[in-house]
Length: 94
Image (cartoon, rainbow, N blue to C red):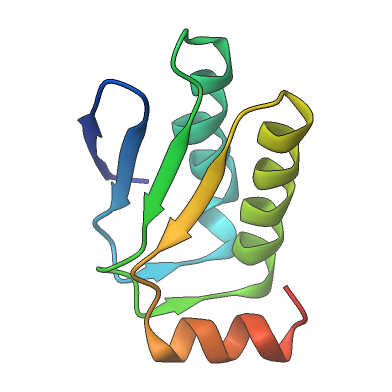
């Protein structure tokens, strides 16, 4: 999964640059996000502005990663979610 990373003082902004997050990207999502739990700055903002669609496996992976961050007392926030992705997440109860 290709991402743009913008590091701030207290958080990292991770922006996927691909329009679709699919099941084949679930390992890439993990590889891109979980290493930040080992950093001094563990807070993530997942900027979804370029993403137009997410399939169930990718959405579940993001949810699991979010829980991992919360369990490690770190924050994980998704922002700039498209209406299509938001509707899908609501339909799937994410």
